[in-house]
Length: 207
Image 1 (cartoon, rainbow, N blue to C red):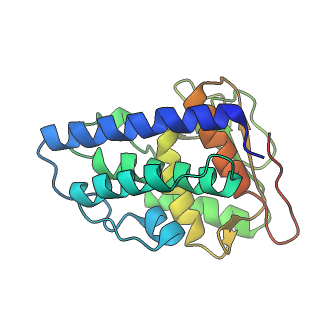
Image 2: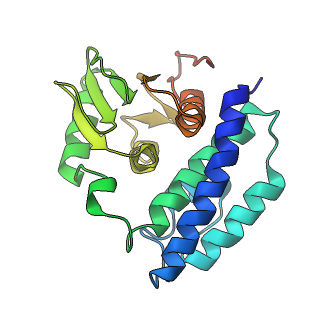
């Protein structure tokens, strides 16, 4: 069963995606970055190379969404996150983009291969044992500050889905996500990523 707050958050995420596409057009953005958008392609097989493609996919997702299906809600949230991140590169301030580089991602991957648990902290102030990826404005100690806005996690999920050390068949291995400060959009992103947490012998649960 889909969490009602995740559904409300997804509806707000649809609106935010529409806004970001409008801002991208106003900034003269033609192509998405990276192209094609990796999460959209992995989850649906659709290749998004341009802002026009992104807008068309947004309309498709709105027409196809099944709010009663956790799987439909979760994959839609991830695709919208990918679209938002993909269209904002010309107008969004750098401080609101991903804060880590490829080298850091490789280090995270290496620690995961050694058995470290990956903890995704959505504005959660308490670091846990393992590798802590923090999203929010004021990171606690002993974390990797991944981004200030939650949609930046689209980059990590895409990287993880492409790594045999971090995922298996779009399931995030030895990974958990916790949420601190709650907003509707944060709830939707938490719900969605939680669906993809858990390796072969680790089942996820829904809040």
